[in-house]
Length: 413
Length: 85
Ligand SMILES: Cc1cc2nc3c(=O)[nH]c(=O)nc-3n(C[C@H](O)[C@H](O)[C@H](O)COP(=O)(O)OP(=O)(O)OC[C@H]3O[C@@H](n4cnc5c(N)ncnc54)[C@H](O)[C@@H]3O)c2cc1C
Image 1 (tube, chains in turn orange, blue):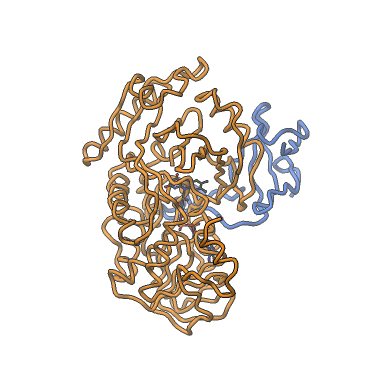
Image 2 (cartoon, each protein chain N blue to C red):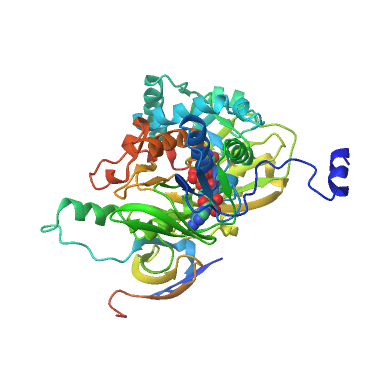
């Protein structure tokens, strides 16, 4: 047993400094309140305090920080999306990731692996060629590769998938990476806390006070506070919060499940995604395979897991990697994904003054955590949408200006 | 295995069914304005609760309505359109 752990067990007080303070009570007013202590909410708090000098801020989290989709996601980071709006936005995020560990002085285990999206049909090869061209146009490292190259990067893969879905090629994205999700929430949380932001866990938002279309305050499980600005970053709970302020949106909630295997010696370096087989997989630094598939098929506001999912995903994994047949699954879980019809987020100002949204991140929002924090902080501080999120506003649906990211976001996240 | 009861074929595995969203009135396309039409096409009642939804039993192509709790996934009842008011 490490000595530090022993010291920990024998000490009466907490021998290690906490990652952040635990303020015991809410103040009566704040300059801004952020609902949701996931990566997005904490990142927005961090950049508000660091770049916009707003420090009288509270982050309210009904559970514990990172306990929502941030701590449940499979951590794939990439920028090879399909639309120009999307590609620009995600590329900025991938750039921001590069020096986050230094920024936080915390190891995020950011690990650059390379990302293959497999094509099993001519039609998907065609979409990939299109994606590669859009990506290259914006200077993103993305190309179509042939089966030999896929096999070289991943010699353990059955290139015929049991004979029925031969791999015809792949979209290869060299910057594709994974990172430690909890550390991202902690890093942003600690950074915000150090700059004076208050993080209140176990504090649920129950109501939002609005007077003549303007936010004036918030009702929480620990009392009422007044504030002129509220940022809602609650992922799977977005429709509930929108109900509180009387806004309608196209967001619908489906569970997204995932599972991990027991740890193995490293054998899988890149991230592998197959849309046709509904499976994606990467191997963590600990040796576990992190596996996921597509969304559950119907609306549900719950994080239950199903045997159907585990069976289906395992069957598809075995088509790609038959040698895994003896490997055990050790955990399975779900998160509530806030889906939009065009697979693009809903961000920015709303028709209620002082009420800002960072939502609709569905199954693909972890990679966007840094850029969402940055652009939402700007939007809240200046009461003006940041240029990069202009196309993602809630009003795009009323104006029939959808973004159309489905082809690049549905299974691959 | 989760079961759903098709009003015509009886209890079947949930994997035989697809959900087509909440039952709601459609505005008259000839008289409505763009804003209301956009709201109908895109916006939905996304919060959790007991909802009436269109479902289809795909092998028999039977469309019907299910009353379901979208927080607990409990299916309260299923019936053909017009059968129960
Ligand atoms: C299984 C799975 C796999 C995924 N894989 C990927 C991937 O590989 N790559 C990728 O980029 N993205 C992925 N995603 C998506 C990604 O996880 C999310 O888009 C992202 O983490 C959202 O972060 P967030 O901070 O907005 O939300 P969350 O982390 O969910 O935080 C929202 C917080 O709000 C709190 N909250 C809710 N209601 C209230 C209230 N009334 N009062 C106070 N607090 C409240 C919740 O408790 C929660 O902690 C995946 C998601 C899932 C579920």
